[in-house]
Image (cartoon, rainbow, N blue to C red; front, side, top):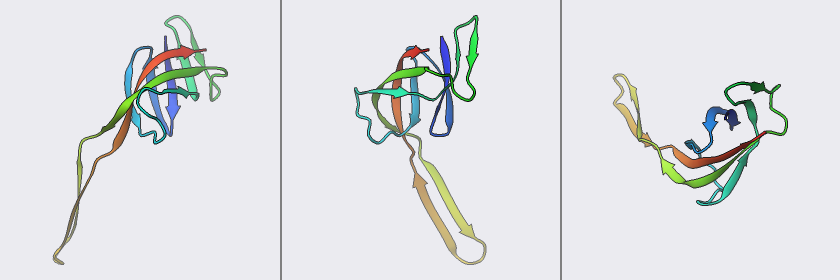
Length: 104
């Protein structure tokens, strides 16, 4: 069984037992359970249930495994002929979760 969920503007295809990296959830601690309620589609191989826009009563339960940082992105700003150069870096923070079950 699989589902397509929406979490803070991003859509993910999830299955039971899958480990997923989503945008940081500040309140979540490692080992805690979370529930993702915005389920857009649920499929089990034979039938597919599409929501309008959400599948009513469907939820995805997951466990928070921890927090991670993504790769460093370098941002370089430059103005021609003005001696203006700025180099900054950014590392996006993610929450790693494991999908336990999809409830329809």
